[in-house]
Length: 305
Length: 280
Image (cartoon, rainbow over all chains, first blue to last red):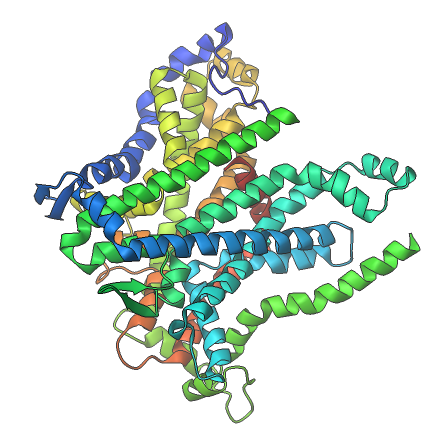
């Protein structure tokens, strides 16, 4: 079904028929997207890499700094702490979101009454953006924690779990949709055959269902992983990194994640803008690395099937 | 079979309270939007009573609160989302069709650049993109769609190219033989076939642009233009007294259109998400 050969799409002789005439319309078809792409992505991206080697106040006022920015970024305890915080959120959210999403999807594909309604409810939080979502939960958390005389922004453990709850609430529905799509491709015949051979529900789940939905599991794992790494809005609204502590004279925002840390580096002090850009480059390499790893992982699975 | 039906009945019985619990955050905000400010703070979970019910007062206050009218923010959000999505769909689908049919060196380079852009997080261009936008005067709600088109082109091109590859070439060749030029072929032959993928990409872009906070926050001139997420963030972040009742009302006002959109287009949204995820 799915052909993964990308290069010569339909480069057969026949396509010459429309190819020539299309090329004349290049300015209409490809050029607008290409120009917008250059403005909205390519130029800022290249400029970003370039700027990471400078100390700059504005684009007209910059001094070459070599690798200084990168060294400063590595020496910045808040960046290191943000990295570990991000990794922690990523690990916990991957496990919890996928477990819940799979369980819900599994239950909802058994043909129970009201499955469509339940599915709609679970998916609904996805449509609410990170900022508004954060304020909804801020209200709830404030209401609950007031009774214990504390708040989300006062305790880094609470801040961490608060964020996890919000992420679960938001993403379980999304991953559930992907798992449902995967579960629906499980062959009924195979299950029936296994049943006749005496398999119980657990055997069916373990030996038929799970292997079939393996691609969905890979997709969801990586989606939750990249979502956690790129997370910004919810982090900003829920705690904005608070509580802040001093470690060897450096300010560390204990619940701050990478994206927020980069944002803060940019806005804190112009002398650090170059460092912010260097952090952004490293962040990009990290996220791109994860995505490439994902690509190879999904590819190798496809070969197996 | 009987046992299975019983098990499914139990599952339904478990899911009903679970779903109500899942909806609780929104329900709590909803009934808090009808409570006086002081009570939201002290007694968040109490339902409004006959004495404490404030009617639409919080809503009126929320809409008029602050120096930037909420309705302007809502209109900006609507305009940016609709124009950006339409522009992006039309331009990137034409580009994707061109790329996969012409498939010359330049097309291939642009295609791989688009794929590449999908793995680049926004923080990478957080400083430089607003600078570029400002120099080119793309920092207003009328011109920001160009930025959205550029930054969002990656996923859209990727999904469109994937779909176009599955369309048999013969149909377009027949159109060419019958004397259609490429523009006519695109609009009367290709576009109708692209409808399902148009919906999938459109849903993903709408969800992204409507809820986007950081990009418009950094790109737009915030004294003149705000969007709903920026508006709500400003409301909470504003100094001194925050009128919680007004905030609750504005949260409800900003999620109601989203929920209505969801109720009416649910099947498209869900299939769009599934298609996008499997590919992305």
